[in-house]
Amino acid sequence: MIDTLTEVLIVGAGIGGLTAALSLHHAGIRCALVDRVNELAPLGVGINLQPHAVRELTELGLGDDLEAIGVATAELIHYDRHGNRIWGEPRGLAAGYRWPQYSVHRGELQMVLLRAVRERLGPDAVTTGTVLEGLQEDESADVVVATLRDRATGEVRREPANVVIGADGLYSAVRAHLHPTEGPPVRSGIRMWRGTARRAPFLTGRSMIMAGCNSVAKFVAYPISPTVDGAVTVNWVAEVSTPEDARPADWNAAGRSTRSSRTTRTGTSAGWTCRG
Ligand SMILES: Cc1cc2nc3c(=O)[nH]c(=O)nc-3n(C[C@H](O)[C@H](O)[C@H](O)COP(=O)(O)OP(=O)(O)OC[C@H]3O[C@@H](n4cnc5c(N)ncnc54)[C@H](O)[C@@H]3O)c2cc1C
Image (cartoon, rainbow, N blue to C red; front, side, top):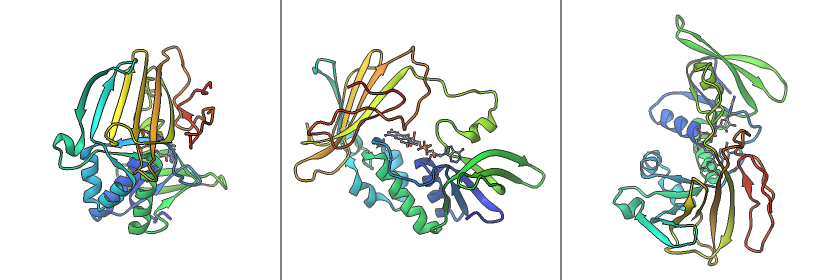
């Protein structure tokens, strides 16, 4: 529930919003979060936390959780499209940083953050099923009034806050309010198909590989789970240059996967239907 006057209202309970909430709480600043989804579920596949991000989360007391769900990436190797090694570099601790780089499952990371937010800020800190539809700034009263719609009932309410943080993702309503003439995000011209597979560890067992290049097509693979029964979960991404494709990006667009004995999660794409 949101108090009558919230110090900080965070719009979006993704990785950015939840981390901001934990940092504000750590600094003694009261905050509340809203998210449009009815239920926060562990969606997505692999994501990489670089050492500077791991430092922040470690200082928030989440170092053990990251170690439990992630893989401390040791190296990044580039191959050409035929599989010939071009170049490699150490990563994280192996590169001399004081904090590791972790390859993790995005959804599991979000659930770690969500659990910590509910434990520290209270079970009602995140109000789901609530969409930010507008903002009105009243400088004389030092408040921002957020217009929020309950998706289940359609009820619209106005919530005042001292500060509103926009952590509402790619098509941010907060950003659109601040920059009304900016338009939608500019497309990179690359379409990605993403998925995971269970398989034996490869190279060091903590290696990330890239093959090919963005100008035509690129393949990325890295483990995102500890080894269990001789197998790891490998995140894979197939990136294809599709400059003519004008469809908007969407992290949730479903792909069509062909299930093999190794595939445990269906493939998803960012806006295209997978063929085959
Ligand atoms: C479902 C999903 C799957 C993803 N999968 C991957 C992945 O596999 N690999 C990867 O590298 N990156 C992935 N991403 C992107 C990645 O999480 C973000 O780019 C990055 O972590 C930055 O996080 P963020 O918190 O800024 O945004 P996001 O993680 O995108 O979170 C934004 C949140 O804001 C909420 N929201 C949006 N609009 C409103 C609104 N008007 N009112 C209230 N709430 C709103 C959304 O429901 C969402 O929970 C995914 C994002 C999502 C949403």
